[in-house]
Length: 341
Length: 44
Image 1 (cartoon, rainbow over the protein chains, first blue to last red):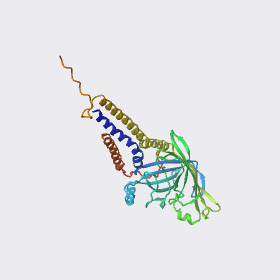
Image 2 (tube, each protein chain N blue to C red):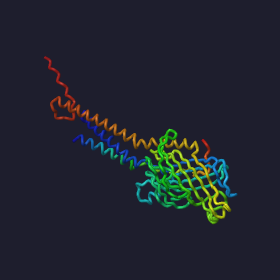
Image 3 (cartoon, rainbow over the protein chains, first blue to last red):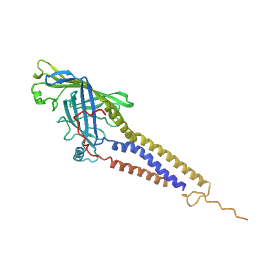
């Protein structure tokens, strides 16, 4: 009986010990993924920014500009891409995103839709029909919105949707943000000529009519992200952005006019909800990368030690009595009662 | 020999369980009915 128990313990010991690396290096890369049906919104604000008045074509200071950013996972589109790809094991996420900007009076300033397609596990971009920014087809390189799981302390390539270019986003060190250990990243996009948004805030003004005047739009930004490294999710973001119109007949005698200049920061209530969401997701990722693998390993070792101890006890018991035909049942046989005289 | 069989059973079950869980994966779910926002949500 004791020997059978030892063998059962050994089987469990091997089971848990094997589960440790299998969970970390086989299950985790396959199970950890961005869900295809994610829906997330974020509100960012710029206090006292400079904004162009398209009526007078002059820049003026206003109280506030608000950016509402929505990300919506399109499950049907992702399944269609997975089928077309022919690789059934590939998980693709399609995010339909909208950056809607409005001024302090609630009037629309700009509206930029995007379709971002990427691998659910690695966050590598996937190139498929529909990948676009503001209706223009693009072929992204690098990441956007989210870093990969288990973010490393290194620079990443980050896609800038306004300029449609990919530039490095530099790792600048560890920080603690609202009690969460984060990696701080910063990217600078130098002055770059960018297309006019397809949707303009004033009726009658279109990208085509603006381009016809010879006026061009230029943009620069410093992008800052505080990224929780286990999940790769930014818990906070800021952007110091400038947009200008340059040259052409539209500006008259002037060389350039500021379209927008401001320091955009995430609104406080969205910081709190993002931090809470990331904290909860972090536990799930840690479960697969740390808690379960180490727990399984410890349990496996404990059970192995227990099974070896049981085996040693069995052998000692067997050694102290004559060998029987049945080694599986090493329980000592009852000693014969002394015969009565 | 019995110890080897017990260890093989433990290993096989671990492999089978891991392969099954990863093969099943998580369901994709459905696209959210929520719209892409063109209004600023109020402070909660």
